[in-house]
Image (cartoon, rainbow, N blue to C red; front, side, top):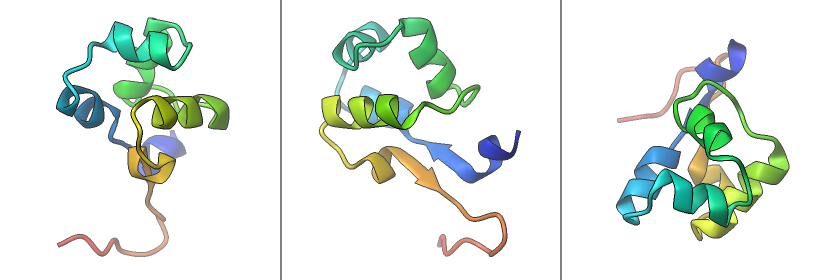
Length: 78
């Protein structure tokens, strides 16, 4: 999908940095663990509500958890 190419999901890194299980994060964001796994693996893009719930629970800005990359211009990564 187009989304997989342009949205970089940092959920796994954020979750494991905090030492949290997938179930703990799913519970904290009030979502099904299967949904969380699909988001974490890049199989699905969360709704804005779920993205914000996840960011809120992990105490980080939503645009740090889900990074948008424009496909039309080269990224500035070093």
